[in-house]
Image (cartoon, rainbow, N blue to C red):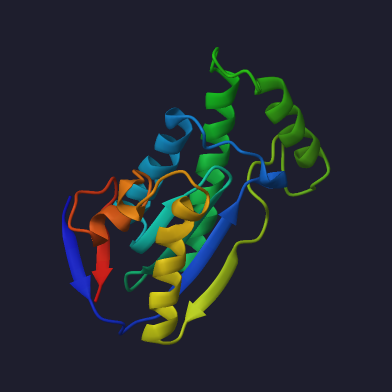
Length: 182
């Protein structure tokens, strides 16, 4: 995957998107791939620029921005709408999903109690978002993102976690293209 290097010259944001009720959904590769493929689509077609990311079992952290002419909130809205529908279908159609009834019932209950949702609700409404106003603050968030799987004792070293940009920052190919900040 290609890597581009940049300095902090435009508005970047630290964003966290969380699954409703903090349910551990992203434990199966199939579900993780839906998220990463959608992010890749947003990069190619919706102006998303990813500087760092990590997909944990129940949330997604990113440092992101957008190319000129794109609105970040629109891109995030479209990403969450698409992944919500696609993940629910994947869960419904997965014969190996032992938690299917629990997950779908919870998503349906949350959807029925939200007048903005037709059937199932997957993501919490709001993203946690902070504008990164300095290089030091950005570096703090990069470290936080990349250390997340280590803190959760999933891996010993950040670059060992496949669903993260830590690999890119350690000179390895990552699942997604990222813009490296130096």
